[in-house]
Every structure is written in C-alpha cells, then in structure tokens.
Image (tube, one colour):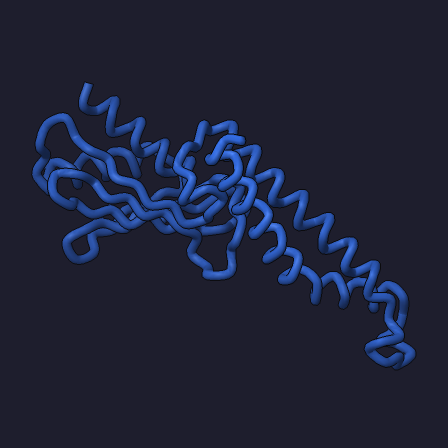
Amino acid sequence: MNKTFLLKFVFALWTWIKLTVILFPFMYLAVSVKQGTLKYGYDFFEIDYRWALMISIGVALMLVSWTALEFGRLNFNDTLQYLKSRQRHYYHFRRGHSNEELEQILRTYASGKRRHSLQKQGDGWVLRIRNPWLITDVMNLQMVEGALYMDSKPRGWSWMVDMGRNFKHILSLGDYLRDQQA
C-alpha cells in the first residue's frame, strides 16, 4: 500500500473523529429540542443520544469527504498539511525583489481582487481575504532569505475544515507572482 495514501487516510480519520466529537453536543441539543425533552424536563440519560451521535458522525463524514475531494481536485501533495485549514508555503523567486517592489506587486494583486485588503505589519504584510460566507481568512506574508513565506489561516481559531480555501488563496497568489515574473 502506498505510504502517502495511508498517511492521508490517517489524517482524514483523525479529522473525522475530532469533528464528530465537536459536533456531538450541538447535535445532542438539536435532537433534544426536536424531541421536546427540554420542554418537559427529562434527565440527560432519557434523551436518545444515539440519534445525535449518528447525525454528528454523518455531518462530520460529509465535511471531511468534501474537504478531501477539494484537496484532491487542487492536486495537493504535501501530506503534512493535508486537510489542515492553516497552510504554510514558501514561494521562491527566480530573480531577487526588494521589499518595495514586492509590496507594489502585492498591492496590485489585492486591488485586482474583490474583498482583499493588504496592510504592512512589521517587516511583512497581512492580506485579509473576505469570503462570500462573510468569513475572513488572514494571510501573513514575509520575505525569508529570498523566498516569500505565506501563512494562510482562518481568522477564527475554531475552523477545523475550510474546504481547501486557504490552499486556494496560496495557489492564487503563487500563480499571480509567477505571471508577474514571466
């Protein structure tokens, strides 16, 4: 069996288990409201928790499968960052750029996209990307030894699955930088 496939399977299984555990209290509350148990004051053990467990397993499986398919569609090969909402990558330039030139390129990139804003922060830049679902992703950009370090993550700490959104941001910026060098 392929070692990469096995590692991706383990990551998907682990993400599925974590999501099931996180979703279970919400599904438990939804099932108890639906059954009317909160209204009549039943005990914890009288509520049918099996339905909540089955629903949380199903929703988690759907979300993890959707994310895995998105990563597969984008030809994602880095197994250590597979299915993670925080993506870290380096972009190596063919020729050197000064910080001013790079900032101008990044400002041009941000102004050409809707819902993008670029800010200078310390010795790097912060690119905020607002998605159609009103979720903000933050991409920290910094020059490290002639390469651009890109760290893209959701703004909130609680996002476990992002359907490959942050990897798409990194691909989009990498494609733009590659086109600027050509």
